[in-house]
Image 1: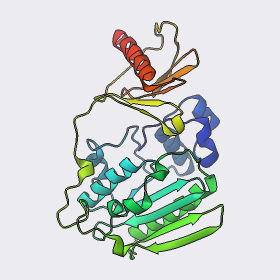
Image 2: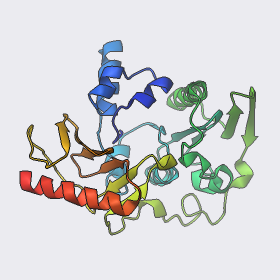
Image 3: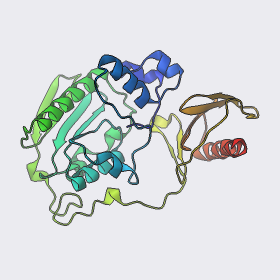
Image 4: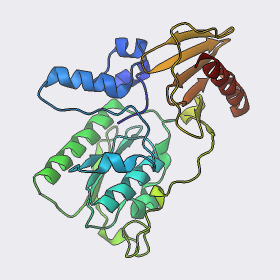
Length: 287
């Protein structure tokens, strides 16, 4: 599951995407699924081109044996943590920032959970301002895959937090059992699973990591379907299977079918919102 598309800067740290995928603005889940089927055609793969949220996570954690975290933000991991705990599903956490990496399995009948550890793990890895070293990702992924195999065969052990710095060639395991919070809202005696509470949605506008652009999320998921040819005023318009692109005067807009947008080349969020509203007007005219 992923709501993003392939870009050239993704290629240095993975093995599933190609330059052609980036040129075609392919959805990451679709490109990855196609490549995996080429490697092993007998594997059954279900891909979901969508963003994980409190509104849809229940449908994705039902009837699964384990959840693997390959996200890049703190809020989504909190969402996974609460949903996994509530539904009795183990999950495997993994994160990389620069050359530093961390991984750990979480079991539904053991504490601490990710919420308990969040003050120690921190939110620094949310943003990729330091970049990501590809070898660090490979080490974290290898640890996560091993944890998944151990979970599937029933080899459950006391969880430990694994940390490393691949550049400094340093690594360590940290025992975390004493870090469980008695009042934790996820794994405590009276769990309320706060990340799963659906809140009234409003149009959300924020800078992306490293201020490389502005991300816009609509108040509700939409179903946009731009035509092949669109009268987009001065915008250079191109339609792809999973999204549409608009370019003008150094500004680039990636507009997804569900109404999400990534806007680059703007000075502030107000300019981004004005561009978004302009293009949504075109979407209304084309529907």
